Length: 539
Image 1 (cartoon, rainbow, N blue to C red):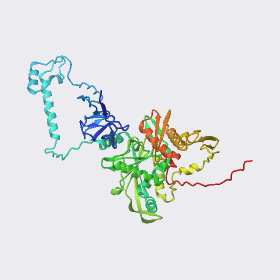
Image 2: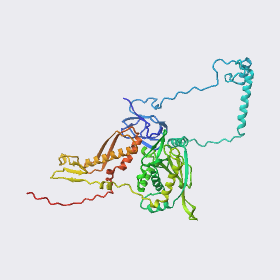
Image 3: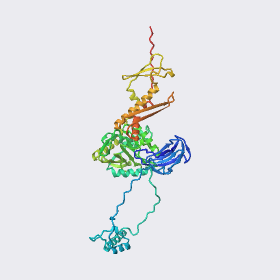
Image 4: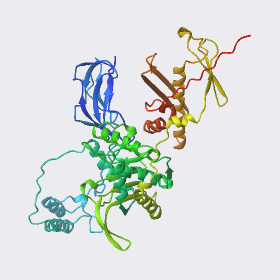
């Protein structure tokens, strides 16, 4: 029986290698299927992998080693492990032969030329004869020897007489996030034509709104308000919410805002999805969750990448302005500088105002100077007029349901209920084992069906907006226990050519857009009014 192989997984489109951080079982020990087996680190976060089978653990890749994706890092089973188990790399590319200056055939040279070449250490095959007969002469060898001496003297003269030598204190190989970040920054700088615009913003309204709302919104920061304003500014200029792929401009629906987070493992950029449709309260909640996950190494693939715009704030370090580098695959990066008291001229008078500088980098292929200026100006105006911003809360699912009216009728002493709404009619009942007649699903199953259907519809709507093809969705809902429900689990099986990461992004949007799931919130008020009718006398 063959062993079950444990491979370094591919946990994102950009992932090419991973590090084995920790084996939770020892080599040679028995492990059970489903138990925590190994922790691996990618360029974005750490992930725990469970054992896929029961058996003896054979560790192939040791802790701290970095290997390419799909490499076998261990096995589970009782069969012996092959020595070349970890060789999961693609075959090496053939090495191209090196070109040399040698000519085919025998080298023709005079006896004296051969003797001089041997004395001077010169390879005759690298010399060209000066005579028409094609024979290398002694003069050709002497000339080559003089040229070699001249080159050596020139190189010696070019070096300082006593060049200082630097002593290396330590060598640290780049791994994980830092290695990937270095590659991405280099790729971004080499492939994206950057333009950077700097614009001054009066931060008075920014500070005032935070002071007014920080008591009601726990944890509110200036950065949250900047994220809020940036999402709405970009939503007003939808042609800039785009990326360029193979001479095709791809425009996106909904604004996803990235925020740069300093973590123990390096700089990470988690993304708040659909930020243009969130209230400031929801942005604070999402930001806190993502920052905590980033610093704990628990970000999921759906939390990263494909941002419409990223905000990077180094103002706490007193940095006023910068020249930010755009993240690969994104069109805009907003660098936020420090809020400082500066002299400004207002109505002919010099006064002190809290000011900050926004340094905004644009992909020049997506935004020309004029289009970029519109967003820069729009973001400035949004921040300076925050006190009049609507700060709209997200739609209340209960309010959306209030727009629909459902009526029910139940005759006799049976449990069956006839339900009607907008021209539709259906029955709810209990199974015979519970005293009903089983004329329709029980209320809990009907609610699970509504919840699952709502999630499916919201998923398809999100896919339609982002132009993602979906051919089929199958769902499964389970509520436990049978009596008073305390937990609900849903599963969606999606048939699509889109990547798993893209589908996960659609799921996050669908969960926010499913109003039925909103009725599960504990803060929704339920009122029941009882109206009594006397039964009609039979006659």
